[in-house]
Length: 208
Ligand SMILES: C[S@@+](CC[C@H](N)C(=O)[O-])C[C@H]1O[C@@H](n2cnc3c(N)ncnc32)[C@H](O)[C@@H]1O
Image (cartoon, rainbow, N blue to C red; front, side, top):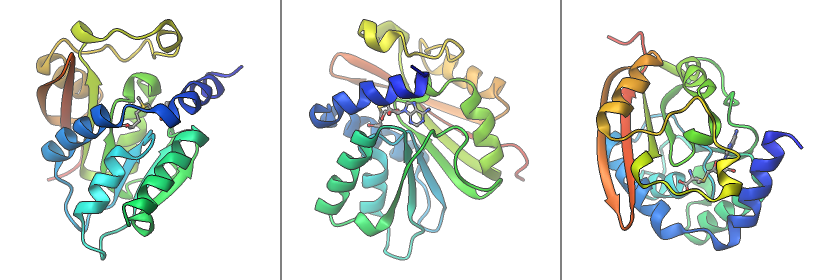
C-alpha cells in the first residue's frame, strides 16, 4: 500500500468521529496569527473536514475568492462539504480530493497558504512547493504539535514524515521554516487542554 493510500485510510476512518473542538481551536489560532485579507487567494492544505477553510469562509465577504481546500481523504472531504453546506458557506470553498503536494495551482498564484495539524504528514517537500505556489511576498501559516506534548498512536506514528522535526517551542519552528527559505517567521505557542500547538507564519521570498 502507498503512503497516500495509508493516510487516506486512517483519516477516512477518523472522519465521522473527528475531534472538531480541538481542530476548530487550532484553526482559530492560525487565522488569528495570519489574518488573510478579504481579497487574498488562499489554500487550506490538507484541509481535513475544513476547520480552517470553514472559519475563513464564514469571516469573509461574498466577493472574496473561493478558498481552495485540498485533502487526499474522501471521508474528510465529504465531512467538510457537508459541514460547509450546513454552515451556509458551500459556495465559498473549492474542495479538491488530491495529494496536496504539489498543490494543484499555477506557480505564484496564491497569496496565503494555510496548513493546520498536517505538515508532519506532508513532509519537507511541502514548504518547497509552497514557495512555488505563493506569489513573491505571499504568506504561509502552519501549525505543528509540540514534541513535548505529542503522543501519537502507533498507527499515526508510522505515517509521520521523518524530515519535519516537531518543535519544542516557537524558536524551533521559526528556525525550521527559515531554513526552508522563508523570512520573517513569527510563532506562538498555544496550550489547548492537554495539547500544546505551535502556530507559525512566515513570508515567501521575493517580496519587497
Ligand atoms: C490531523 S488532520 C488535520 C486536518 C485539518 N487541517 C484540520 O485542521 O482539522 C491531517 C489531514 O492531513 C491529510 N493529509 C495527510 N497527508 C496528505 C497529503 N499528502 N495530501 C493531502 N492531504 C493529506 C489527511 O487526510 C488529514 O485530513
